[in-house]
Length: 271
Picture: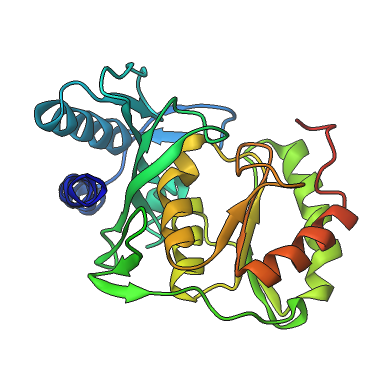
C-alpha cells in the first residue's frame, strides 16, 4: 500500500507544484499573515492546498486531511494526508528557488509523536526536483536512489537550521547557532524545512535541526531522510516534533545531540 500512496502523493504534489510555479511567474499576492507580520500566506498557498485536498478526496474519499491552510478532516480509513502547500512561502514571495510542495501520508492520528509515516513526496517546482519515499523502500530524487552522507565528525559537518517568525524566539535560536557554529564546518539556512530534510537525504547537508516545526513542515521530509539512512528524532530519545527535530547519520546525530543540549536547545522558556 505504501508504494501506491507514494505514487499518488507524487502525482498530486507534481500537479500542485505546476500550479504554484505558474502563479509565481504571474506574480505573487500576499493574502494574509499568521503568527506575525512577516509570516505570510499567499493566494497560491491557498490555491495549492485546495487543489491537493480536492485531488486526495477524489482518489481516496475516506482518508483524513491535515494541512497548513485549511481545517482538518478526520479519517475513516486510518490514513491521513499531512500537507504543506508551499513550504518556504517567504522564499516563494521573494522568488528564491527553495520552496516546495510537501505531502506526507501517515497512519494513525496526525501527531508526529505517535503516527507511522507511510509515504512522502516533496516537489520543488523551481528546480524540477522531486524527492520521494515509501516506508521500507528507500528514498529517491527524480527516481534515482539517494543516501545520506556517511558519518563525519561534527567538526566537518555542514549543518542546516531554520528560524522562527517570532522575533524573541529567533534571537534565542541565534544564540544556539552562535554556540554551535564554531564546532561544525558551517551552518546553512535554506528557508524550507522540507527541503532541509531532503538535502540531508541526498547529502547536500550532513545534518539539520530546528525547533518549532509544525507537523506539515516535516511529515514528508522526515520519512525521506529516514529512508535515505538518516536518523530523525527529537531530544532525549523522543520522536521529532514541534519541540525539536534533528536529522543526521546516526553517529553524527548522537554527537550533535549532545552539542545541542550543551548549547541549551532543550530550554523550555520559549515553548
